[in-house]
Image (tube, rainbow, N blue to C red; front, side, top):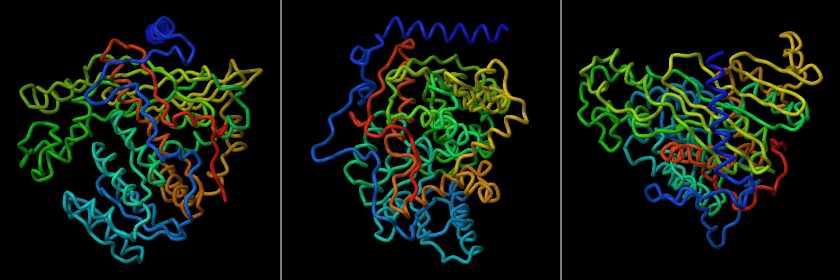
Amino acid sequence: MMKKFVLYFFVAVIGWSLVSCCNSSTTDTPVCPIKRGADSISVEPSRPAGQSDVIGLRCDPIPTVRVAFIGLGMRGPGAVSRFMHIEGIEVKAICDLEQYNIDKVQEMLKKDSRPEASVYTGEEDWKKVCERDDIDLVYVCTPWFLHTPMAVYAMEHGKHVAVEVPIARTMDECWQLVNTAEKTRRHCIQLENCCYDFFEMATLNMAQKGLFGEVVHVEGAYIHDLRSLNFNPRLNERESYEPGIGDTKSKRPGLTGYWNYWRLTENTDNNGNIYPTHGLGPVCQVLNIHRGDRMERLVSLSSDQFNMSAYAKTKFGDDSPEAGKEYREGDMNTTLVKTAKGKSILIQHDVASPRPYSRIHMISGTKGFAQKWPAQQLAFDPEAHSALSREDMEKKLKEYEHPITREVGELARKVGGHGGMDFIMDYRLVYCLRNGLPLDMDVYDAAEWSCITPLSEFSVAHGSVPVKVPDFTRGAWQKIQGFQHAFK
């Protein structure tokens, strides 16, 4: 009961902050004038002359999608493996700093009776990959701080680009992506796999069929104990590691410091929701964000940091560099967003606490309710005060299974990738490119979902001040009414 009281009290405080600090109308939404570095948090720059929006962008069909993969560490090899099960693709090039990763992927191609891919291993070789004239899609799985530069460079050289999350970390990077996509008319997709999870897609289908009535409030999260990943075991030896912890400017010291500490750096240098898209993406599709509604303003609050320091001391010792480091990222960040149509979104982030995994995925409407974590539940009027029984819930999920998972779900489960959602994501990407269709997620999704990071950091740093969310579509957010997947 005490935990529930604390949560409700916090939500009430944040809600009061919204009411007292922000007028509910769009025109009176406060704009924070303070600048963080070169980024003006709330400014919406004018669209460059000669450009137009890319809402519903269609490009010429590509019968055989020629792909280059940049980054073959944790995520890249899995992506290559999944692509082996998709028709109409060729892997033309692979790029990574470690020969071991290159060899592993080449073996995958050989096992699938495919030609060897061209190999790039230099630190700047990713640019050569983007400059090739025989590649249609650049698929990026590198550390976060390289995502936007690689995406922009690829689009500038005529390539469609698919980038692991988060695709951007600053407001400036968000606008770079939007402006480049509009200028080049190339697809830019953030690879948000959670939008393709089976439960998420079923509840999206339910929402689109009106089962929840008017959706009023949604919740998403990334609650995942990543302490052992942030303090990668390879770092225990530190055999060739000399630069400071998390020094992303250092040059390849045996790859140990540069490549294994980049993730820890995000928790060291920032304090906000630094990884918002897994929980946010699916509920934004339910709310038709920039397809009839838009995120308008937010407030954010972080707890203090406790668990990272405690873990570092336990694992490495009280006198270790890890234990002595200052980790700015609070254990739990909670961000509240208000939309132009009066809907609310709660987003949480916690990768430091010893607790079960959760993305929450909660949908609350005028006629019904759905939630995935901590326990899957569905409830509908007139008996919404009680969740459906397990048997009735399974029947409802089967009845409203999304057409895409109904079509490809069996294969997805066999291929795998977080239970199959990774495969469905890649399958849909290739399907849309081959058929000249708009992608399921566009550059505005990439910018809107990613901008939560810098905006939440700003709000936290300034006492949970309300912050305006820019309109990355620059007025085109009502051009399409309702989120839909495209089919030929």
